[in-house]
Image 1: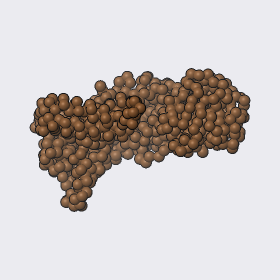
Image 2: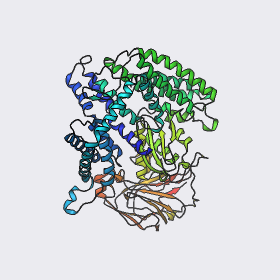
Image 3: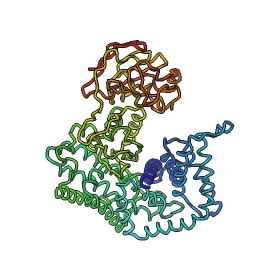
Image 4: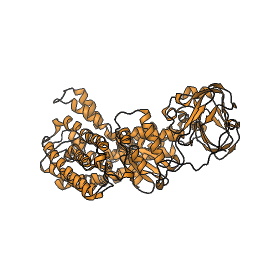
Length: 639
């Protein structure tokens, strides 16, 4: 249940991510800004249709592969549910909850039915096309049920929301504390969705955030108190950690923590900071949660109303000044909370000897070079994130230890087989801000705002089979193979396919060209059949047949990867003649290729051949370049 709720929370981030754009358009178009009516109308249109966008976003987020068919099914489900229930009782208003429910149902149905095969005469409606159809049918049934059971549920939700609003300072204070306490579980988005988009009503707009931008003078009470914390409090906590760092580590951690402080001030993104101390000291994090709640109470008592489209950073603060009330007092409150955070954090860190960044024991320290390389995730670049992803996969125990990879705004959400194989020190060494073990199989790694680039690269490398299979030991920084290798003689390795031999550094993919998973070479194929280059055993044949791993009798693990981005072909253009576990002989047929199809539908047909378990200093020396025929020997030497 916890994992499922986390998936819903993550899925909500997709539609919520459009909120800054909507808020920007809506504000810029107002008379007190640019006064352009069609710009304001454009932003208002996004706010008016958020429930539908929630249905689409949640469905895509819950689907296995993020396919648009799930989003279409979510929209259809929302229309069927809302209009069906209104036909029974015109007073029913499911709004955002209806959108979330439709998205959940559509996403689950997509995962169950997106590969459904129908009889030939109905074949057009099979596969992903079947998902919107089955979703519409299921939602018709749910519309009939909710048409009768929703009115009392709606009354309870409205009563709860009104109670929290009427509770005044206590209500906003409790919400502030609970909001922070749910962050470690990744469930704060769920409660935020209720408070920001459901509770309260003003001219048809529901929720504190929606009502704020609709001009409700009573809205903004559940958002104003976050500004002092995110713009001043947590940045001050970063400077307290810098001040408490050991002298020899100050320089190394200052760049990282100062960058996180500026990100929090400017955008309101705070998770990288919070995860740097929440597990070191629950007391420290509890103080942070209570301070957040108290800030909410103070702003409520002072009758301050302010809101944001994304988070409580400086961008939202200045953008929404025209809608706010008592906004400049927030700066004074922020300075006071900044002082409180600095004093309390510095005192508790030193008093409790907390191992915050810069105070780690010698064997746990992150080197300055590592911080400089991975501590700042400002500009995405393929090689940088591919490198991080590669080291993360190693530190997570290899791809065979990972059952699922997902991400939200700042963290990787992982399902693993064996939590004991996780190397937390290596994760932090290569850029992780924090690691959270939710339970025996659910793991979260805090990366930062560019986590999506890392997650995408990890998924791509896993699909390509470019990560080590050996488990990571918590006792060492290096992955050690269990295989004892003997010398690979000149006659023991032959060219697996006709084509032109090129250095691996010329492959147009940093995963291969930068030798992230090992040294090797590549072939620009002219032949259409791949043969085994060695005597050995097939250790891995990918379901899409685009890559095959062989362990030679001498102990070398060899990956033959046909083409670039060929995983997207889903097996088309490939015919395999072996399976995992088969013993093979040099020159035995492994794969037939449809080269014309691969060249037309993939980025490249080049075939990298990689030795994935060379010794640390091992390398492949090409003794022959240019055109070679399948079966040729003496083209490489392992040094």
